[in-house]
Length: 243
Length: 286
Image 1 (cartoon, chains in turn red, yellow):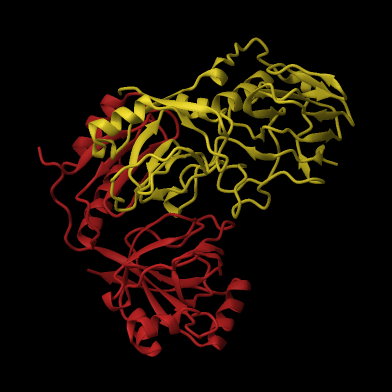
Image 2: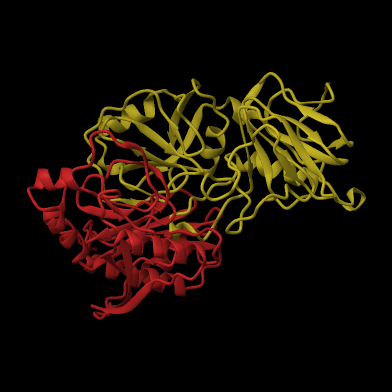
C-alpha cells in the first residue's frame, strides 16, 4: 500500500485523511475531489468535512459510533483514481487600495527588496491566487500564488492590532485580515470588502478551490465601495475560471 | 416583559454556552460550546431540558445574579459554594427561584467550571445555529456587570425533571488525561515519547477557552507542518517547546505538529483543572 492517502483516527470524533504533504493546485484538486465524494455520501451521523492544503478532516458532532465501518467506507471512497483534469471554479475580484495611508509597510518592502512601490503593487495584482481553504479566523483566506519577488519575512514583533481589511504579506503567503486582530504580516494595502458577515445565511461567499484576483483602486473608489457595502448594494465581480 | 437575570457581579469569566456551532468550520468558525460537556448536559437533564440547551458557564469565581421572575435553576460542575439569598444550595438538584432572588457564589471547593441551567435554556442571541458566546461572532462574549440575560417563562408544572440522575464528581480529582496518538505522534523519538507519558505537567495561568497551556517546556526537534486541520483536544507541540492543548474555542487549522488528541473524557477532566494543577497524559489505544 502506498503511504498516501493516509487515513487515521483523530480522537473519538474525527477521521483524518492526509495526501502528499505538498502545497500546489494539483494536490488541492485531489483533496477537493475526494471532499466532494465524501460529502455526497450520506453518513449516518452528523459530520462536517473540511480541507486544508493536503488534508481532509471528517469531524463528527458526537463520538463516532462504529469506527471500523466508517474507516472501511472512507477507504473505499478515496480509492478512486478517476480525478477529473478540468476544474471549474470562480474568480472573485477584490478591490484593494494600496495608498500609503493603508500600505504602511510598502516603503519598507521597497527598500528591503529594492523594488519600486508601483512594481510591488503590479506584482501583487497580477496573479490569479488559488484559495486553498479558510481557517485561522472566520473568513481568513489561505491563498497561494504570491510572486517570489514579494516573499518577505514577518515582522519581528507582531503588531498588537492590524486594521480590518488590511492586505498583508508573510513569507510565501498573502491575505486579508477579516477583522482587526494582532498580526505579524507586512501590510501593503486595505480592502473595503466584507470577508465574513455573521448576519448572512452564508456568512462567507468564498469556498476552498475558488480563485482571487486583487485590483488596485483609488481612495475615492475605496470609499465608494465602502458606501455600497454599508447600504447593501455591493456585489463581488466574479467570473468562471477554467484550469 | 420577558423574564431576565440581572448581572450584579460578573465573576471571573462567565459565558453562555450550548454544544457549539457545527457546519461552519469551512469558514474558519470555531466549534465553541461548553468546556465540560458532561456537567453542561447534567444540569440540563436534571431540569428536563434538551441536553444542549444554553447554560451559563462560570469559571472559578461565580457571578451574582438577580432573577426578575420565578423559575428553577440547576447548578452542575465545580463546587463554588452557591447560595440563594444567603442560604447554601446543593449542586445537581432543582433549586426553586422566586422573583428578586439573588444567586451568589463563594469559595471554590472543587473543580474549576460550574454550569447554571434554566428551564428551556437561556434565551440569548443565536448565531449559526448556536447561542455559544464567542468574541467577534456574538455581540456579548463575556458576562459584564449590569448585563441582562433573558430566559423563558415556562409552565413549570408541565416539566418532567430527572432529579434522580446519578452524578459523579470523581473526575475533579483525577490527574490522568486520556489521549490518543495524534497525526504527528510518530515523529517523536522513543525517548521523547517516554518522557511525554512519564512526566507530570502543570496547567499554565495563560490557559483559557481557546487553549490550555502547559508550564514546563518540552524540548523537541519537531519541524512545523504544512497547516492542517485541528479540533478541540488536539495537542500541539511548538518548536520552542510549548505544549498547547486546544480547547473548545480553538482555531480550525494550525501549523504545529499535533502529537496527541484528547478523548472526550480527557477534555472533560481537563476542563475542571485550575492553573497550577498537575496532569499526566495517559495513552489509550483505539
